[in-house]
Image (cartoon, rainbow, N blue to C red; front, top):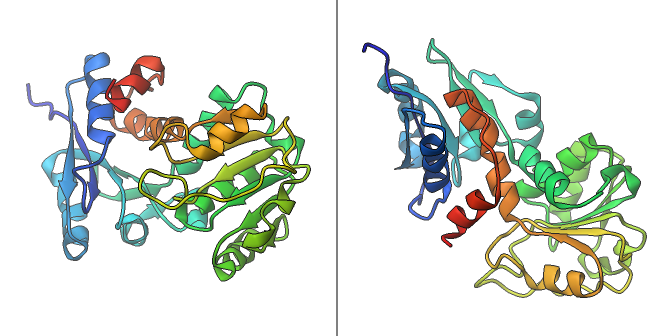
Length: 277
């Protein structure tokens, strides 16, 4: 009876929109695990104090979202190699001694989504084209390089940000001007949009797919709408397409397993639950 019920949660500001509590509490219920996962709206000025206090309150870990991913990395006692390379943390695990272990599972979630839903997709079969140079792009590029992509062709509306990523990731990343996005698709095996263009309420992603091989896999990491205009156009021309919801689901599995001791399954029931259907 003296065992503490494990607690976990997600920290951000704002946080009310997060789908993580619905997902993680579904898994807790599904596997009969006594535990709780709660959303926590924490200001940047309170973050350090809160993170040091949570282990003493019975928390075994937390997910971290905007705007705290970079700060959480700097506050951790131990940082995984992939989190250090990406420059941000989205999953924190608290040791029995209260020490904070920071990881970034976005790249893992991205790859698992494509491996599970992309048919016979092989990242090593040709260059990958990546649109965008934000935090999500760093995770995607890191994952693709680790998975064997021979080359990353990167384009961003602000070219300097793309050049900064090339400095960090090396010569396998080649930067293109945003106006060259159509030309850079020639011969690619994978196309990934990491920008918010095409997302509900955002500007349209204007890119010609004329040079994209129909054998290429196309992925949009946003999931609102689930089938973005990019995915709709790519599917119509015969490309295999993968929506962004799986990345959200799979990036959550390593944290759940570490905190609660059970690797959760991502299946159609899980997808429909998170979509609210």
